Image (cartoon, rainbow, N blue to C red; front, side, top):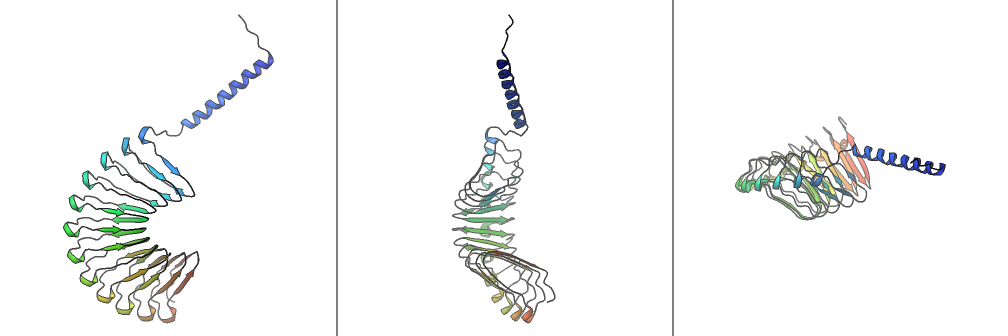
Amino acid sequence: MTVFHSFDDIFSIATLKARAMKDSSRKKNALKCYQPTGGEAQSHSHTGKRLRNSHQHKGLTGPEAQTHSHPGKRFRDSQQHKGLTGPEAQTHSHPGKRFRDSHQHKGLTGPEAQTHSHPGKRFRDSHQHKGLTGPEAQTHSHAGKTFRVSHQHKGLTGPEAQTHSHAGKTFRDSHQHNYLTGPEAQTHSHPGKRFRDSHQHKDLTGPEAQTHSHPGKRFRDSHQHKGLAGPEAQTHSHAGKMFRDSHQHKGLTGQEAQTHSHAGKMFRDSHQHKGLTGPEAQTHSHAGKTFRVSHQHKGLTGPEAQTHSHPGKRFRVSHQHKGL
């Protein structure tokens, strides 16, 4: 039996078909994106102002799929968590404001699998802890806001195994503390909010072993202070929040051992201050929240030595001030 429709009925049917086709097109476009399933689907919660970048979470299945929760302002970048299965799969919990980057935790099994607990605001980066077994496996405790990067602690046994205690908001980066024995083993105590990076403190014995005390929030980066003796040893005072990174303090003895005091908020990066003696030794004062990078201040003498004062919020990069 033929059914006749009025013009209004035909128009309504055409409208409904057009809407259905439009909805179908939207669904097809949405399905072009990769759809993670089950426990493999990444879950990212982002409240507030922040940057979230997570790269190359590949081949993770079931409970091994990474789960990242990000409340507050923070930056999260975790790259190349590959081939981790069972209890070895990395688990990262991030409450509060912090930055977490853990790269290349590969091939860890049983009790050697790294375990990182992060309460509060902090940054945790642990790279290439490989081949550690038994009591030599690194153990890191992070209470409060902290940043922990420990690289390439390999081949340490017995009392030589590195021990790091982190209370409060801190950043700890200790690289390549290899083959240290007895009292030469590095000991780092970090109270309060801070960033600590000490690289390649090797072959230091007795009173020459580096000692770093870091109260308050700070970031300190001092690279390649070599061959400094007596009053020429670098002295850096940092009030407030700062960045502290001291690399390659080698062959320093007695009072030449570096001493760094860091109080307050600031960023300090001093690279390659070499061969400075007497009043030519660099002195940098940083009040307020500042960024300071001074590179390659070489061969400066007398009043030509650079002096930089940074009050307030700013960014300072001075490169290649040579032959002044």
